[in-house]
Image 1 (cartoon, rainbow, N blue to C red):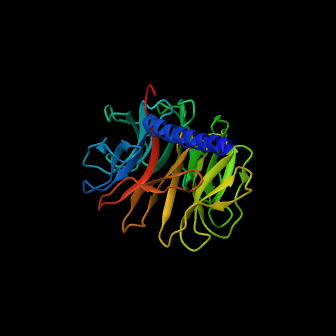
Image 2 (image 1 turned 180 degrees about the vertical axis):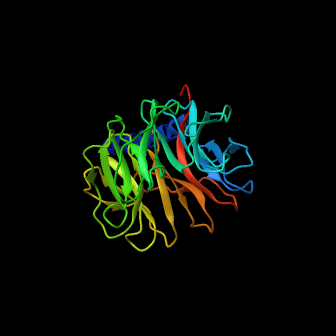
Image 3 (image 1 turned 90 degrees about the vertical axis):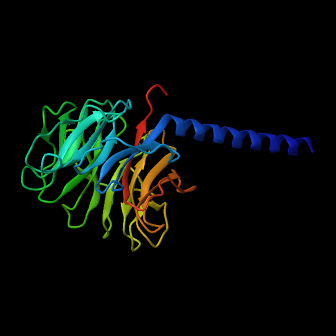
Length: 294
């Protein structure tokens, strides 16, 4: 009897501590996303439970593809306010919005490096879509891929030494990893489907991504070496554009399962899928933003 009571007590404590961990995780991070609820795409931020949704950009132009700096102080995003897609940066409260790229080409998909000193992005400034890296102030731009295909959607490894991206250089879009300087490109997935939008786990061991290998776009995860590829979502509609939380506990993504594009959150193993936005407009491209001081 005492052993049973002790086992029950241990189970209760574990459940309680798990709840504390989740609450602490939610308080340490917010979620950035884009929404057309104001008639055109704007960059928003909300709490990790979906409350407190605020428009950060507040411009008459199209603003999208947000990504937060590792310290939570800055947000980089794409804007068309100058006539084409340019990469901007602003303070986390939406103030001081600055154009970093100032190029007539299309510059999209910006992602801060783990140390916050660089931004990776993709651009067609040299004729086709390639991946570039620049300093966080927009200087020292250099191209790090060079293939006849599309190289897109870069994300950094946690230590900043490597970058994952997708490319159709071998016909269909698949995941690749390279060193941060563009050397040593290695293919990660080998499937006849389209594998897109990778995000590196904070422990550096896994990559979450989108694939249509089972008929419609769903979210999958793989080890960095391409082993143990497994499906996390299972719907008849699109589940797309996943992004890992900085603590590794959650994955944010977009789903059309309730009739239009909304932002969802799930645990890293695919369980406890929770809807965060409830708006008739399209909400997409969720990215996590650390809360400063937490």
